[in-house]
Image 1: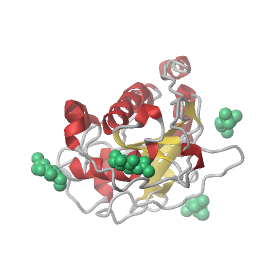
Image 2: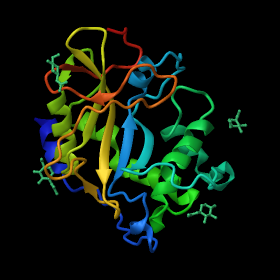
Image 3: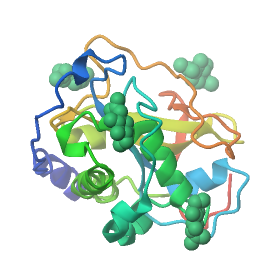
Image 4: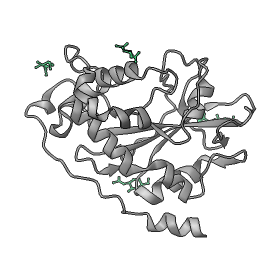
Length: 249
Ligand SMILES: *[C@@H]1O[C@H](CO)[C@@H](O)[C@H](O)[C@H]1NC(C)=O
Ligand SMILES: *[C@@H]1O[C@H](CO)[C@@H](O)[C@H](O)[C@H]1NC(C)=O
Ligand SMILES: *[C@@H]1O[C@H](CO)[C@@H](O)[C@H](O)[C@H]1NC(C)=O
Ligand SMILES: *[C@@H]1O[C@H](CO)[C@@H](O)[C@H](O)[C@H]1NC(C)=O
């Protein structure tokens, strides 16, 4: 009951900053996009998905990226430059690590080139420092790990229903997320791996689905070293949210 109350009280507590100016002409480009997808992943699951042995994965949801939908690699001549984000590195290392590799630079470079150069059509994200800095801010405000815990969704050896996880997110943020899993060895079980929360260009939360749009289980392979495919979680399967250090099922 306590969790439930906290969940309900959570509605609207997030104060997202508006920022509504775009660069002129961006709308006309072939890279037109409509929403920003703040993608979080559960490090324990990411490690389980891959062949790489992770060392001490964080025990909280970390950032995968901030992705404009429908646009990728918008400016290949705008190279990633870590020197521009030196002051952000302590937070980048904590909240936006490459959970599969000790050197996180490749992930950040990839995220900037594939997604950041497209997000940069917005004034609030039009430099590397703004893109990474504002994404970190959005991640901290979203505070997904605490939100799930307050709603009683914690890593556990028991299984969840996907709908319970989605309901928790919806109660707090008031919008429908996209929740992704990969299949477990155990029949009828899938592993919770990625949660996407979508935002408007003004950085206000919005549904990840468009009106009338149904989420397809389109596979997506987040890393080359990952063999399994990530799909939208199947509503009918049991969902495992693996605790750190737990034996794999
Ligand atoms: C691509 O990025 C480069 C380097 O920042 C910049 O000079 C150029 O104007 C950008 N091109 C477009 C089409 O935005
Ligand atoms: C991490 O990788 C980048 C790019 O591959 C490289 O420039 C950098 O020196 C590496 N950093 C460390 C600490 O090894
Ligand atoms: C978001 O999705 C929920 C549940 O499907 C729906 O009730 C609500 O109207 C949607 N909101 C918007 C702004 O489309
Ligand atoms: C969900 O899983 C059930 C049981 O394995 C399967 O029959 C069904 O086709 C799956 N649904 C989707 C949308 O993949």
